[in-house]
Image (cartoon, rainbow, N blue to C red; front, side, top):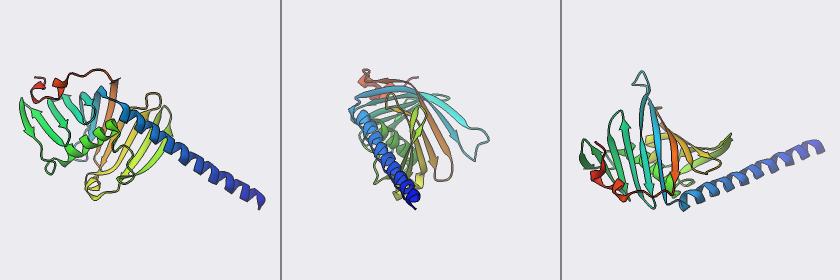
Length: 208
């Protein structure tokens, strides 16, 4: 009986200790994000859907400037840029700028909001929005996040973030759609707090 009690106490202590460490990790990742002024990187995006026989891969660049500006630009296999300034989002394609209505572009808006939130730290680990499970994944911290709110549930079943343990910065994000489609985004060549020309966030800056 005493052995069982001892094992039980050790198990409870271990669980409580892990939970405490998890909270500390989330706090540290959030502090890193909120303290960051600029970020730029390359990305590789792979989309897997039941409607397509093969995954679709695209590449591009992401630029973020605190507190709420971002440029998400696809370079291959097509040229398209999404510019975010606060709550406003503009799409640039074929040299033409189009203000996006969030109601009609929920997937774009949802993806951008999630990436912007992870960069700024504003909604990184918001427990009113997500059920969150943290795990040690080798060189990374892995966060499995299940949406709680109805609007986000309509778009995403689950989100999986990986953060580099050394830099405390996002390494990849996996967006699992409500219908089972998967968008995996790998970030590469990340530069932190390197000056970014503000023209990158203007509508006339799309690369031809």
